[in-house]
Length: 322
Image 1 (cartoon, helix red, strand yellow):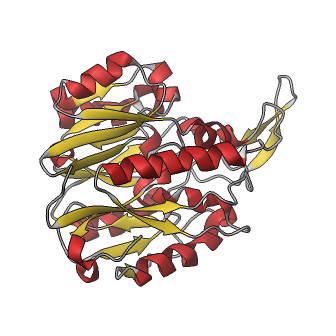
Image 2 (tube, rainbow, N blue to C red; image 1 turned 90 degrees about the vertical axis):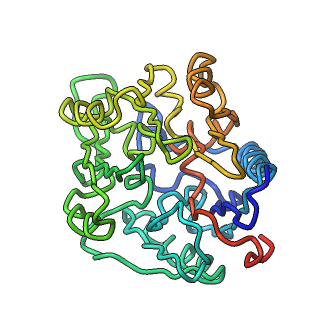
């Protein structure tokens, strides 16, 4: 699976210190609100298998070193976003905008920045007053970009008429107020804003996945979006829209990584997605590659795509060893 002179490059975060620190999404806590415990040996094994499958497909993996105070670096899809991610350009001509993460993960930012700059990428920031969690909520799909957002909440426990008699409010991660800035950055390419509705799908890349050549096709979970947003997606994508069933959606089927390189297209998907969904992907000329990363989903609330920061194609001759 050769990519010729250009090689797809991604970020992955070493899981040596992976744990649930902030407990900031519904997957990270038990019914009673206690933080889940990570089987780190299993997480390391699963992470290594995903890395190996990507490398076998010709992808270059840049590893973010582990840090005991920042276990969230295993989810570098939140590191930021790259303008024109699919463009074949040298490192120094790529502009990577670093994200403004929620407070429990804000300390990850300098780790991502250091790895990217050491690799030759140009990094920039955005207005620190605007919460925005990178390509997890802002990504290309066909001839447009999608921006997903939701209400930013102070995460807390509140009383409930249930057992246990409380629940946790999580909210979402990207503030819609970032829309004008992002629209200006990608102009004249259109931006389609979509509001999220399910806290378990707190980032857009847990409910939507553009894949295939030109990112033409879109996996989408209807229940995770407002009715107005769904109508907009149907109008924009038509027959290229693949509706996810509840079981596949809850396995984070949309949290998949698309790869088109060397004339071949693949979709790296979470293990356990249905055969019917895999068949729908194949019918569109894309080969599904299923990888078990269940420890990252069940304990941390992130799957394949959350574990990958897409840096696009770079000239293979410019790349140092990862």
